[in-house]
Length: 327
Ligand code: DAH
Image (cartoon, rainbow, N blue to C red; front, side, top):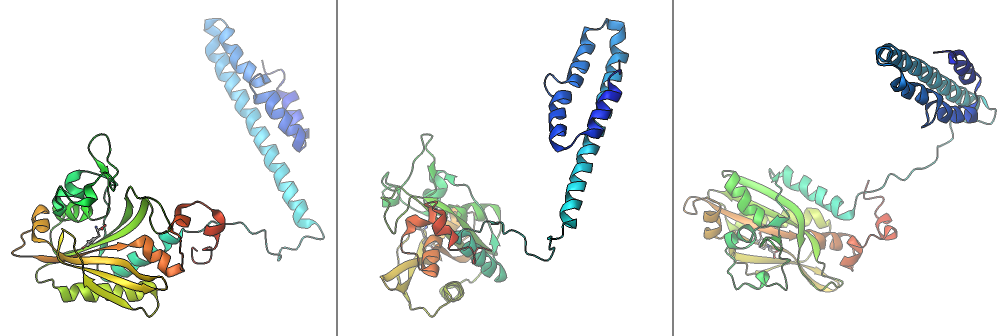
């Protein structure tokens, strides 16, 4: 049965690159000789099949090994010839391959995560598809609050929604972990916005939550100022004014002065007692602060980007400008 074995081995041993490629099809292809040989076993009388099958497979493996060895031999010889060529200069720099870069949002997020972990915070995640309970109810957001409006929220057919902020992870964290708590939650949020230079339906926030005994507004403001100074890396004029969010009391807005006027980037406040309760924490014993940084806005401020749409527009010419920072 192996009457052609020597013929095949000889053909392989003598083959150059292009002949070897042909042999691949002739031997192992769909209607190749060895494929046919293995298939042919099925036609034999039953009592012969077992031995013949074993022999056919063994032969095929042998020929395959010879084939692989020849291919390696040719590749080695080609490389050796290239290295030996008189004009080959091993010290010349190789071709440049683009390694890709991190997206500016990822760069700033990673920096923020580094900053906050150095202050003892841990990173928590939560789902992007949320329930009404975690996104609104547990955060003390009443049924008539504008954020619940279909104008703002992407509701799903099953009654769930795409989270409109990272705040629901406050509740999820409190339900899962005991104080003292110090967490950050960078994440993607969704709102049914009319898209323009400063509004996107998809954007990033970074939530923060600190819960412990005796946490005060002074702790909150200190943390926020440290954060802004580190992250924007320039002398900033920051404005603090009262802000209203149902899940904090008191609430604040920290705004940063830009060429175009004040930009709201850091709403924050002391966690509302009802929110602590929804998280299973006794507000008589513990207090906390929370913030919801507009991560996308911080990125825009940092790099002087004036149109939010460029960030998810997928235009590589825009993204390539961040090649240096994204490494
Ligand atoms: N979740 C709010 C929003 O998206 C932002 C926010 C405000 C978060 C105050 C907070 C906070 O944690 O304390 O509009």
